[in-house]
Picture 1 (cartoon, rainbow, N blue to C red):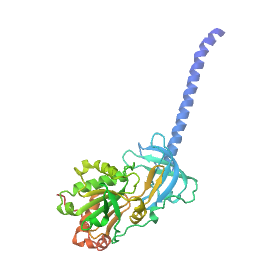
Picture 2 (picture 1 turned 90 degrees about the vertical axis):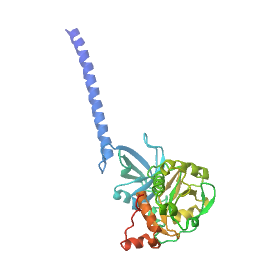
Picture 3 (picture 1 turned 180 degrees about the vertical axis):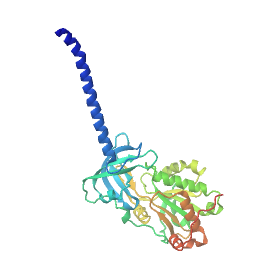
Picture 4 (picture 1 turned 45 degrees about the horizontal axis):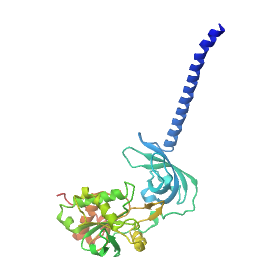
Length: 334
């Protein structure tokens, strides 16, 4: 009888052990899932199907006007290498609690069909306030400002001056060719490509609208690098764009003056460049017509401003025209 009990008890013990392991595993998974969900949701809900990653880094600069933080972040497993880059923050209260130089943790939220952003920012250590300047403290070009005759080096290695574009409306944006962030330099460059293509059939704009992409990376953006970069937009422009769209780099000794005037913050960090955005429409007589410090604009917005700058009323600034209630309309499609 005892022998029989031993033979019956062994499989029961095995089954019990398996059951205990299963319960522990389920409890562990449940706990881990709950912790992940709690960390991901924090103070704000996470969109359905969004991926969530943990970020640790140092705040380099703050752009409250555009709800962005430039952060020098550690590597994020399965997402990105260690690098400095800008992050959008949806909750302005979270921006208000950090300062340049702060060490932080945060969640990176990556929706399936929207721009990534961060939330649940936790300040681990207050910084000294050192870092790149907040873009809210730099010079912002104003409509009517005269643009200095800055010297640049173009994609052919030639020295050019902004005064060479007088008589035409000029669109100027700032990029660097190694920029890895699709919503920054690549986006504005694609938009410039679309502007080039969209104005081909409009005689006034085709003959009197020029585009200029200016790099603030003189160490790497050689004339050859600029030409290679421009080549990547051939599909958008429909061929060689250099007749109306030029690429140039600011000489190193002139970099600070040029970026300061156009409201661009630039800082080297870990092999990457942390920078703000700047796109201007300049009138044929060399004055600022409009200036944008973000990437939210569409090609039609700049085409509309360029058309207005070329019109007889273009001697007025954009602010004057809008203040007088004049609409600035895009040209009719041809």
